[in-house]
Image 1: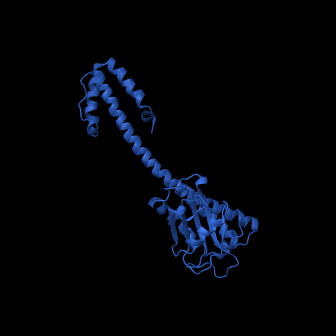
Image 2: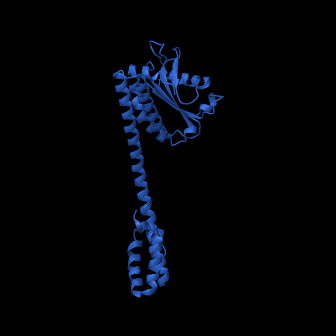
Image 3: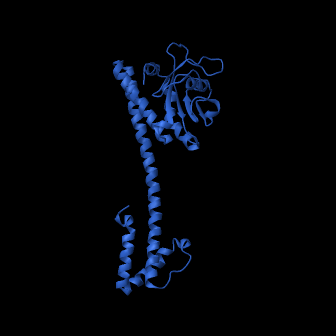
Length: 265
């Protein structure tokens, strides 16, 4: 914002000192007061006192008002730019690692190279989701959902279909979590949100969840279990659309999902 805006009090004190040294300076202050007060007159409905010191004090208050207004607008704009910058950075990083993973799989690179590139893109995706949630890592856990390699037809949506699937996560996978996500993968919805998880789960302190999966036979899914109330809202749902749109298509790359099934985190 520049030195003037960072140190307004210094200039106000300097103005007060100069006022004591010159009557002409006081007249100049009168002119500035009349000009500066017009845009923000609603803040100061009363007229300034006629004493020189009060005139200068009034001038200082007006300057401070402009400082807070300008700095507020500046910080708001910079905040928007920073959020956009962060989102673009996460997107670029994810695309970079995803393209590397797909290329390594398609070229039949070594197992270690494939696993490293897949782990990188999974980590970058989870970081992207974490930036959207704005939570500490202890307050959410991410799970990748993949059909079991033994299944030829995949997992279908519908009440009577099989739910044999793999969960890949850095977190501990309990039976209760697997049962919870078993219900989710049978959902006909491509995206699923639940803000009342605690009402139908007993042994895990999970409060909310978000999940995405492709339509039809399950090829690839992703779930976020949230251990805090009041996180999911309309803005979070909207921001969740961008990264998860990639997953709706990624699952149809069978070589990629087969390689992902070998990952142990």
